[in-house]
Image (cartoon, rainbow over all chains, first blue to last red; front, side):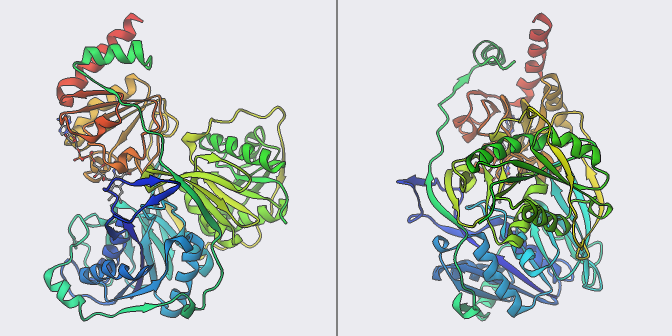
Length: 273
Length: 324
Ligand SMILES: Cc1cc2nc3c(=O)[nH]c(=O)nc-3n(C[C@H](O)[C@H](O)[C@H](O)COP(=O)(O)OP(=O)(O)OC[C@H]3O[C@@H](n4cnc5c(N)ncnc54)[C@H](O)[C@@H]3O)c2cc1C
């Protein structure tokens, strides 16, 4: 089983975002792997494991499009356990979901993975498009917003559950496929490869951290840097970002001292009850 | 050059248009106005003749793609139908609500069309320009779609639900072309059965967080919810802990709500949570921690435990209603 995991670096979402003069100011930020992509790497690793901490069978390849220092995020993923990484030189200003999908399409053509597992959205652009466009481009089936993945023993199909607005949907699908993961994919028993791990297998309720051993091992792993041109991808973006603006601030509220005061305010002032 | 029509994917049951599509019809009308063209709905499914008639009350025309092989909303089969519909009416734009169906199917259709797509738009600013939240709602971003056909999903809470048009539109059959699910198949749909309004449409939302500690404690929030005729919501932490189903999660990566009244109970107010509820008209926060960030967006903050405040809150609202 070879699994490709596209990953994006995003600015630390916990830092206050600076928006000024029509632009988002990211010069002073720190970067991290998009959380959903980190979950996708965790899911991919579990799909190649005979259980938590067990022997691994198969290959997980992390791929990112970004500036040179995205290698720091890819190294972290290698330290988590990804087997190798590919960094394609690129900058957000020259990318949109369609172009990212077209670049990834070229990587899929070259790498021929059995499965692509990726985050459902990047928490900066919040587009939620790349997986679906990539699936369309490849003519592959897609399963978005996954809460669980059970890979069949024959390695040719999977049963997945999807998080919907009003419940959960269970699907069976053929591989190769594009899967995009939601938050619950890192649950203890959310992901399993029937060929490798028994039904009793359980992992941590979260994505793994890079261990010291992992960090040492990562130093010897391949991190290949390539260009978009070398993949033969041409063309430009289909959606242009014109400008950014800070959202209107909510006006400051008040603290109320008691339930009585709260009820009175909601009734007399806000008139909502 | 494409024509001027705006095509909208209308979500339906077998008999009715779903209310989740109504705000998107408003957005589509705005876009159609800018384009100087018609609003054409497309309904997809199996045995949906009645739903197509219902949907026709809101648009100039409905394309009805009714086929047993399309009963499940699979992006693999639905996206090609949308492409066929775009081609058939020479549409300038294709829109859908940013529901789990819209978010799944529209980007695939955009991919097949080679069209640029704007996700989760909150405003239509021109024929090809839209405003949308990014960075968990910490920025509002203006985007321009550069392709002849424009694709967009619409944030339901930011447009008013549309009223029926002055006269109902016509219904026309749409041939799906070859249907290939590419091996995908729906096994089961476990929908949360609830008598409460949908989160995106509720006038009141009562959400609980990790501070509720366990599932049984949500009972008291449910009582408050039902007293106010609202919908129940939750933070990620409450969903992850299994206190409530995942589909109650409000936030950047869950449901987006904008009720008249939002209660955040035992919720700290992480940016990912705020992204899903800060457009609410009135926000009430009940939290024992005076430093909790939720107080920064709350109109009314009550620094206290929920145990000591929610039961008397219910009693007093009941008394108020009895008196009123
Ligand atoms: C990729 C990603 C996506 C995410 N998406 C979302 C999302 O869509 N929605 C979302 O909600 N979160 C989301 N999160 C998680 C988010 O960052 C927070 O972790 C989460 O919102 C915290 O939930 P909480 O406020 O219930 O828990 P906590 O932050 O632990 O807060 C619990 C609060 O309860 C209070 N409390 C405790 N006991 C009591 C009591 N007895 N009475 C009153 N108050 C009490 C505490 O003071 C505290 O403020 C996401 C995170 C990531 C990484």
